[in-house]
Length: 185
Ligand SMILES: Cc1cc2nc3c(=O)[nH]c(=O)nc-3n(C[C@H](O)[C@H](O)[C@H](O)COP(=O)(O)O)c2cc1C
View (cartoon, rainbow, N blue to C red):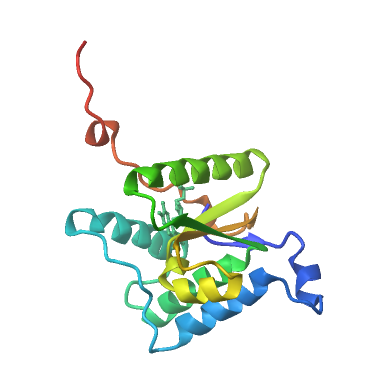
């Protein structure tokens, strides 16, 4: 699941006088991403891994959304949809106590994976988004998340828009031999 959702109760929520936090968060993130002086604080991947991000980007933007690499305006507009959680009605933020070590990140990762699988089993789609973690202070402020919590990623949650080609992408996976060493007994 990649890039577009149709609303669960979004139509109802957006007409409610007390706008829900998801809506507020989206507007604050979009404002930050639109402001030229706020570059997202996402560390670049080390060189050996950087190709994964660019290959996925090419699949999503090029193949899925049909936007040419040279069309920077359309790519920027598509990229900005991250901060609206692709119109998903539910926006999730995943965070981890800063005092925990990278070994503990496995626990958070497993929790997240289980959450995604449970959503999938219920027929609800999701899109993990590291992009929103590029504005941790915005998220902290809007949701009242304490300083000791690192913002790891967001997750857009909603029903998949089946009409979008991008949602039919089956992204690449490394071959088992590249990621696993099997030893003889
Ligand atoms: C750690 C991580 C961060 C990601 N960040 C983003 C993101 O910011 N924006 C986005 O559109 N997709 C992002 N993706 C990709 C989607 O979440 C999704 O995994 C990808 O489209 C592949 O979907 P599939 O696993 O169902 O094939 C990220 C994936 C991972 C694993």
